[in-house]
Length: 291
Image 1 (cartoon, rainbow, N blue to C red):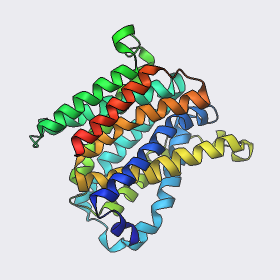
Image 2 (image 1 turned 120 degrees about the vertical axis):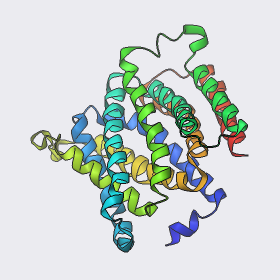
Image 3 (image 1 turned 120 degrees about the horizontal axis):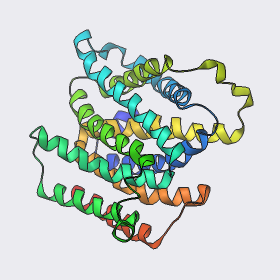
């Protein structure tokens, strides 16, 4: 397919990953807004329903590449992790600040990925370690930790964001292994399908009245589902199998700066000089790891 040819080179992957990170950054604001309308579990089911439908053409095209029964363990486990991540994602943005949450998750995630990779005895380059540390420093600057301390990060409301960071770090490493055994398009589509099935049992359809939802909901839900997940997450998952989990996860360092800007515009959350400086440092970390 044309998409497979498009992302066959690293330069194309880096461009698509950059666009995917923009969709992820906006998603934090989108999630906080849609959380005002429906329950967390209802949102998860509808999100993955749309995600699965959008990728159904790929599953049909690659139906001959469907895995045998033994390989479904590589799909079920990340699907469960996707479900856990999304619960924490929607709860975190509802109870906490979307911009701050994006920073906490996206600066901790590459660190957890690196630690997991080290635990699995994968080879980690010194420049990757330096880039991760530099990106983490940039994230801490954005949160103004060096002035206000760590208390704000450790607030109970932010525990959901910590869960997001840990689960996504595990997912990043897991999908790198899984896609060596299963076709990437099939893997992504089936992950969305099984996450949808898992969330189905927690969904209360009696509280979902789509006719009463306004354009504000539909616009933001489209971005958080089709934009951030169907496009953004799918590109991230595919790219992980090409450039590796460490390099792919470092792109997430660009999300805090973008997310803070979005939350400032639409949610009136604080946007300071620390955000600008920390964001530039995080972008430098991406360059160092990938040069």
